[in-house]
Length: 410
Image 1: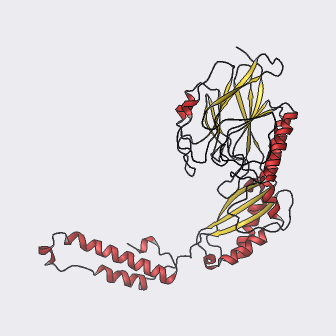
Image 2: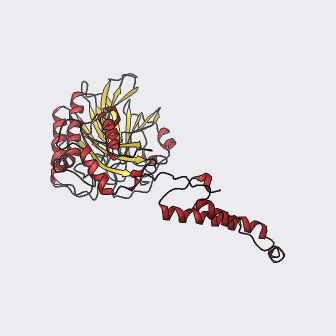
């Protein structure tokens, strides 16, 4: 049966007013930019919901960063929900491990257009058609964490009724293997796809991922990257549902500040100013660092160069020279330059130290009469030689500060 087309916005892991992590240094002008980034991203989310004329907004957990959010974050959230209500937009919030329902301390009241799903049990709300309120538009099912650590699966609690022509399930948790994330409210993908829902609005995993399109099972990623491992575009999803319940999903980047990692092989470079020139050219290429209002860049240098001897403070000087000194649209700030450089390999002459040392190792042998008292002597002698070779290599590397060519260490 055909219904009315509608739109929804799916976001998760807003972590409002959360500080950036892993920023070892920040210029004075940059600190307020970073402090306000999550709240500015939230403002953009509200703008997007209004411009797209969505019927409902869904937050799949971790709206706040911890159970005692700042009053600034609470006011921003309340005012944002109220603004959506002025446009007839309903908001649904499933609490996650950072903002668990039973332990979240709030100091304000919530607008009437907000639904907070209960702790530990699935509840659903039928959203009426705004044109014909007697008809259902869709149903939204969700569950909140009662506390931070939820190790049981919630998937089986989601049981769809036939009250609405289209149904969404909202869950904060780990679906499948997700390295780097706590395994909270774990579920297999088949646990979700078999439940009969049209769309699973997930949260908890901070990178965007579409796990299934039939039905849709989607992580939108977090709203604003907060450390170097959360690089790439961050934002929210807008779902377009047609009259037959088919869904088209569009991602909208919202983060004002982006993270990027820039890797550069500087093998053979002798002069630091040449490395700086190459880095400046790479940073000037906007396709390489992104198109957000500003970008934090972590540079990783690889290869073999005499510049391996430079101290961390030397690279810090270069990072400061490559960074913008004041805020501007599209600013670039080099958070750090990480050197993985090795010294150039110096060829060892035929009569050099390495060759003479290995010749001595080759003379290692066991007395022939050891075979009578130890049957494994034939295999032990080559192992001893190989071990001595490795020790010679390691000691020379330690002494000379150089990686020895593999072919020299037979």
